[in-house]
Image 1 (cartoon, rainbow, N blue to C red):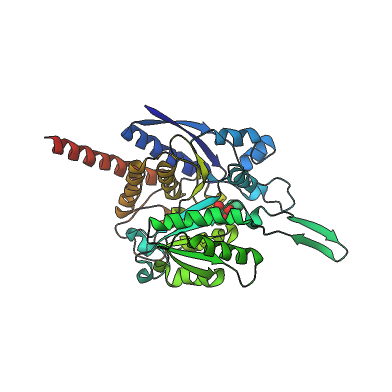
Image 2 (tube, rainbow, N blue to C red):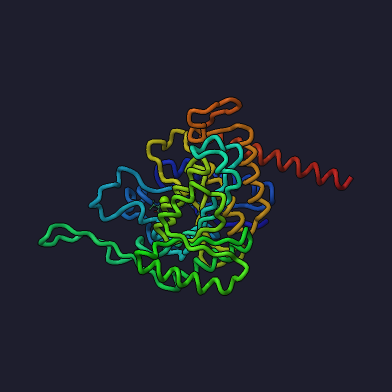
Length: 383
Ligand code: IPM
Ligand code: MG
């Protein structure tokens, strides 16, 4: 039997709650499809600061590197929010993303038909929304140096640096074009080329790369107008590719389309391959939501859908990935809802509110009845 090694990093706040449920889903897929997962539990974020004084120990980064994939919850919380602190939980994310060379962050946004009423955006705008944000993840203002506060005769000043090399831009842009080829062949490159030098270089690289993809339609969009169009005509977008911070902001905005921040998964990928697929880190796009931690209320679907991406990209298990996605759809179509998915002020008829565990149970049930239906079909076919 194939055994995969996956690093599980619960992190802070609701992180451990949602990772626990996604692990159950992955173990169930394993039982169904005949593989096993050896889980390696690692500590990162605020909990690691409390235990070890750093957000991620170098040996834990190395241990993550040795696995087939990493499943992460969320990091951060008010306890570690002191603006003058030298160590911050978020450093764990940057150490993992940068340290593991995971340069592209894929954030797919779809609107489940059962959740049309959960979004504040008008239903007719949401129909047909199926977009993919490719966010550059290991450069830009997140990693630029200097980044610091200084004392000057004029008072305190602070500096952050936006930095991009052409190689950093190109690898994410190329991946975006490749992914567009498997979708609707449209790339929207998002920048602020009317203001920023890094954006003007970004635009040049996109123009160079497009020559190799004559079958893909390309649009350049300024980030401010893109933010507006994401709400006004979201169904027009296919693949959006953009730099680190613009991608961070636009993906939270796009989550409103999906009904809740709790719905969106992500995959961070680099070039490195293992014997099973592409090494990657998988996490929901939401944060640690400290006020919800440990209360069995957080929506686990963003993490469960991230686990589906893990199956697809890092383990080469497309079948299992599709089964998890279908099971999530089935649970939602059945009316199962965590609190964040209850329609704002709308009718709750036919809906059943559940907690974190209850939602994962509904997905597992759908997964198992899907497997039964499959076995029945196989048995029927051999009769
Ligand atoms: C995300 C988060 C992180 C980011 C934060 C927690 C540092 O917002 O993954 O989108 O900005 O990358
Ligand atoms: Mg974010």
